[in-house]
Image (tube, rainbow, N blue to C red; front, top):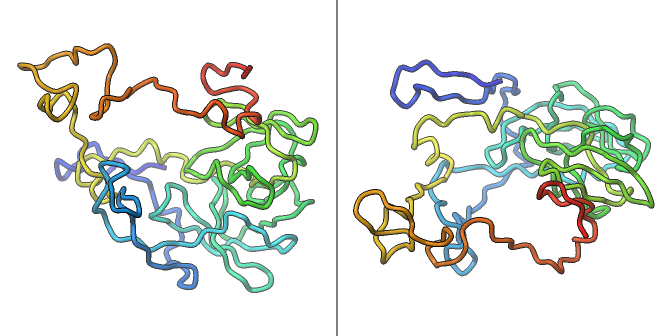
Length: 280
């Protein structure tokens, strides 16, 4: 649920934030946290590979268990917590053998719930089970693409994939992009939608809120000089005067297909996201 702030300052007028009152008020589990150096958009060589990143508040990293490979050992949800490194909330699990681990929390998960990772786990939200054993129509998250590798997709706030069909040792799932992809029946998935589903509806309200998150300003190319950008120059507001929008380096900016046509995983795509057309 979103919370609208009182407009006592210009920056708070129209600003909405996620209501964190649903979270457990406690410090993160110390044994599962560590400091880390953020790359700020730089590669190991120091060269900027992703622009408009830098600054922001210091963060403590929470080690998330994407594999959840403690099979047939029940766990209790001890707390639902905020994680500054991702859009979804996280849940602290206390296993029956005493071990503690963080996982991605699902939408309706709450303190005191019991979850389990098992081949024969019941069809209950939060449980982790092979996708081949889940009936058609269920929503799943934290999906494995290769058995035993751990969840790689459907991990951001409010996202989910829907089980569509199962045949020949593979299960077809509908992704948020409307792409239909098949994965092995042995791949584990978590039942349920990822938590914090209203995350994308929040309004920062002011530029400073983006700077807290390490997002630096983006300048329009049309506001630059011709020496700085292909869209630059002209008196007043001008059209770009080009056949297609370009990046600062003269490449296609919009509509250019970048996926490798010979990529090995293409064979697992049943329908592409573009108009949901069947792949030939």
